[in-house]
Amino acid sequence: MKVPVARPVMNEEMIQAAANALRNEKLLLGDSVKKFEEAFAKMCGVDHAISVNSGTSAIQLSLLAAGIKTGDKIVTSSASFVATANAFVYFGGVPVFADILEDEYTLDPAKLRLDAKTKAIIPVHLYGQPSRMDEINEAAKKAGDLLVLEDACQAHGAVYKGRKAGSLGHVGCFSFYSTKNMTVGGDGGMVTTNDEKMARLIERLRHCGRNPLPEGREDHDILGFTARLNTVNAAIGLEQLKLLEKWNERHRAAAKKYADMLEGIGDLRLPPKPSGDVSPVYYVYAVMTRRRDELKKFLESKGVGTGVHYWKPIHLQPLYMRMFEYNKGMLPITERVFDEELSLPMFSEITDEQIKYVCDCIKEFFG
Image (cartoon, rainbow, N blue to C red):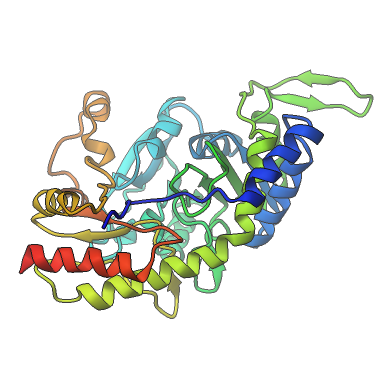
C-alpha cells in the first residue's frame, strides 16, 4: 500500500471559486479577500483578520505594527520552522530561545528568559498543539505587558480552554502553506487580533504603506511591503475554511486511532491526547523514537511516506549559529525532540485501512 505523508485537497467547489474570482473580481483585494477575512475572524472569535501573502509576513508585519524594532529581544521557541525567527531577524530583532516541554513540544513557561530589552513573546503551537497560553500571558504581563504573538501557523482551529488559536494573545499568525490543515492553493497567511489600530496598520503595511484619504488619493507616509493575498487564493481559502472543522475532526479521529494502535510499541512516545482544556488539530502526527532514521527508512521501503519536522531546531541552523553564536547543548529538550521526531501520514482523507497499514508496518519494525 502507498500512503503519502500529506495530501492537500482541491475539490471542484474550490476550482470553481478560483475560476469565478478570475472572471469576475479584481485580481488583488477583490471581494473574496474581504469575505475570507471576515469568515476567518469569525472562526477564531476575534474582531479582525488581515490576509497576507505568507505566515512569515503575518509575523513580520504584526511585530512591526506593534513597534518592535532593531535591537529588541523576542523570546520564542527554537522548536519551529526557521521562518518564525527569520520574520524579525530581517529587521534586526534579536531571537532569545527558550526550551520546550518535552511531552507537549511547546514553550516551557518556566524557562522564558525575559529582561528589560524583551519586547515580545512568540509561543509556537507546534504540530497543532496549543501552547500553555495562560502561563505565558501571565509572564508577559508581569514583565511589563509584553506583546504576545501566537505562531498559530500549524494550528488552524485548535482549541485552548474553550477559545480558538489566534484569539489567545494580542495577535495570532497563520500560514496557508499547501500541507497545512487548510490552504489557499498556494502561499498565504492571516493575522488575527482584537486591536483595531494594529489591524488597520497591518492593512497598510501589506499594501505598500498606502494611507487612503477621504478625497480619494493615497499618501505613502510609512514604509510598507508588497504582501497582499491574491483574490484567487482568498476564494479558494474561503471554500477550504468551510470544511476546516470537519477536517480537524478527521485529524483528531485519525490521531486517536494511531494512539490506540501504537500505545506501548517499541520506544515510541506519542503526541499529547486531547484534554478538557486542550484540543489539538494534529497538523502532523509526530512520534518520537531513538531509532527515528531507521524507522523512517523502513517505512519508506514499505510505501509509507514520512516527514521530519524539522531536521534542525532554529538555533542550530548554520545562519543562526554564525550570527548569534548559538551552539549545541543550549536547549537540550528541544534538541532531543528534533533528533527523535518522525511525522506519520496525516491528512483529512486518510482512511482506517491506511492508518492500520502504517501501524502494522511500525509493529513489524519493532517486532
